[in-house]
Image (tube, rainbow, N blue to C red; front, side, top):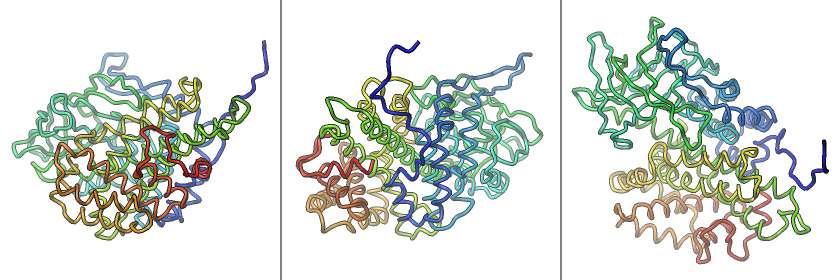
Length: 533
């Protein structure tokens, strides 16, 4: 029986166009030559903003994947059962080309359109984005062996989705299995062995500590051979329809990313096919790693968008002390700062996507080598704190599982950890600074193009040029952070409204910058910034 009328609660944020609502994303799509994709992105925006899709996203995270190692007769099958909501989500993402559309139709802006679609899906349900990202990233790695590329790439480009294991499927998704318990990021410490069996196949034996999306159709795997660490394509199902040896030992009990299964697996005479040259496994798989690092940036930016959108929605519909929350200066400052962070992440994400297009000039190819690592470090590290601040805007509601920001708060750290945690990325940036002068030159040219309008930015750029020359492991994180903020500022100065650029420079580079969200310098147009949320 009702006891009272419920008032002063925000209505459900459903049945809207998430693409149309995301002004920075829309602007970046048009800026970077993907305006031809606006209609399709609008359709994706309306889909992911629908009540039904959001219900599936919640359900997929509540009804988590379950390992079914044996069938009822005791035969080993090593399957993972997902709730149908997960299959509906990933089927829509694959159908929209969020996995490999940039490879299927490589025209100007192709990676921008694909990035925007990926971000829209990941904004609402991030777990499925893991196999979607790995499938996208596997395509360039497969080019190392034309025969394997001919076998697998057409299936990866398919927009059909079939979550079952089977031979001769028309479509496929890829995963990867690199890390082992004794090595982690140090993959050269791997002990998994691969022996040639005489007919062009290799037999792998060993244990992988993290294998995400184990129901994928094939995996890129690193294993030791007599010639050194090598890369292999390991299918789940062999050509004759029998199951490859792929022993799922257990599913990881993770902080977040609950809709996606991550596992420990054992190889025991498992069939693999050599990809690229023997002993060149790291180099072979590196292009896949670089692409998934970019997707970590995209995924974090997508999460930031969800966070700021939910916080702004709540603040516009909730009143306290006689006024709407969004009209109260303290809350306006927080929303403005959250929006500013989200816009900066989106700007750098789409700039990087454009640099990965086939028609990108040589300078952009050099630029993306350094800029992807720099942005992966910074944007992904900013994600968890951003999600927390947004969650606090909802108060007690935000802390409950009935609202999406508790899930988002748990989700954001994975992008900072996956594909190289902070120190790994920082050291990679150091290597690029010392060994790849073309990349440094291209990055600096990007920064230099924004000089002349903000004294604080110019001063930061000057300091950065001096600092790079003396960078070492003890200062690596400081240098990478300075590079990242400079890149974001450069993009906002050149492309964002003046209120956005001025606020970013003042709050991230100026003398009055604060430590927490909402500590904006005086004079910042917080109302304009919050309006872009």
